Amino acid sequence: MRLRLAGILIILVVFTLVLLGGELIYSREFTSVTPHFRRLDPEGKVQSADNYGQLKAQILTLIEQAKTTGNIRLYDYMSDVDAELPKACHEIITGEPLGAFAVDNITFEKTKILSYYDVKVNINYSRPTSEILSLKKAETAAEFESILRDTMLGFEKQKAVLVNYYSEELFNPFEIREKVSFGFPDALYGGAEMKIKFFPENGIHRILLLTFEYSEDKEALQSKRKTANARILEIAESVGDKSAYEKLEYYFGLLSDVKYLDGAEAADAQTPYGVLFNKQGVSLGFAATFKKLCAESGINCIIIKGTYNNKTHYWNMISFDGGWYHIDAANPDGEYFMMKTGEMQNYDWNVMLYALH
Image 1 (cartoon, rainbow, N blue to C red):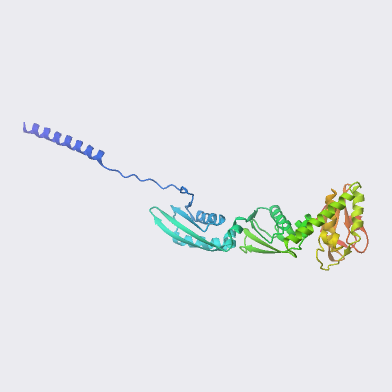
Image 2: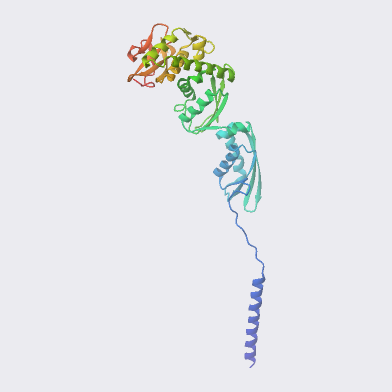
């Protein structure tokens, strides 16, 4: 009897504990934890990085946007943050083109927040915001040529160009500048002297800062170019009813009245303005003027750079009747008109560069 009563009591105690335990479980308060997501905050001001490469990339993004400050969150950053933050800033300023070109110094403030670091980056620039944001990019020599052409035709005094694969053998800025001048004689005005600074000084990824010094201000050069181009158009229209060969004869005869300056320096001597209005010019001025006249008449004409009697000299080659012919309106020693290559005595040039015949 006593054993039966004891069993009943044990069952009642267990049942009571179960009820009380369930009530405790259902009444207990729980705390939920929301994981960190690597994304921008609602205002788009915070960037994130997991490793050293991403850290440098995020700082460079701030510089590309000319930001003076920005926040970067380092999630799951397994390396030494204290060592890599100053390292990244130093490498950007000394080794990255944009950093070397535009940044004076970079400072940072690091704060540990639960499972990540919040890094506030402060950037001091050596160049104005407009210069950073107007930076041009050239992946190829052709793209660089296009940028340089627009710069020279616009008489701009400075242009910064980011070149991702710079090699002086494949990507010579001075040779490209010469190519622009020969292809677009309008770029010859002002006799611009081009200087280059590299950021950084070494490496295949660089910013080239091009500076130009002109003989006159932009307005004066534009006026001379406009005046000369109007005169060239007038001359071309006056012989519009003639054959291509007759036009070439006329242009050659027209330039025979211009004084040839053998290496002497004179204002506008290498431009059509100097040749047509000052009635004097160096060989490049003659060749540039002849090319412009041919262009207005639809005649394919290029400028050749070479030597005559071992002195630097410029003349033209003309595509005519299925072949290429030489014309040198500047030569004072005789008439070099529609000459074949084999007839060009005392001339020398890079035949492979002008492999047209």
